[in-house]
Length: 120
Image (cartoon, rainbow, N blue to C red):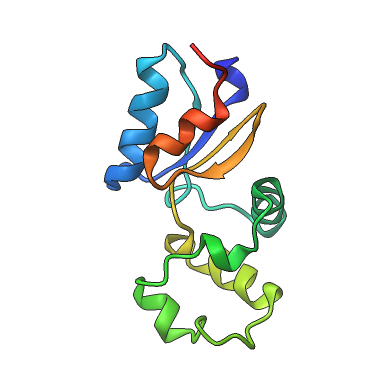
């Protein structure tokens, strides 16, 4: 099953590290995507957002400098504009996002990752 789990991870983020630790504590070895070092292209980002079932706006980090600089808080920003911004500035994507056979979630708090796992 672990080869079917992917975590979009930032090793500097405590929530991301905690979600990864929860997976590893259960003996799982997920595929780790450091999306800051290997940014998602537009198609991959669209697929990830679709998998979560929430609008991209809900997956953005509003405290990032680029968020304010680009005016992304403006409700008039389209999904296409948000996608372009995240492709250009991957730090805008909140983390960790975990994809597993049971779905995809932004795991904040990190314990949300447990919702994607079968019961022990």
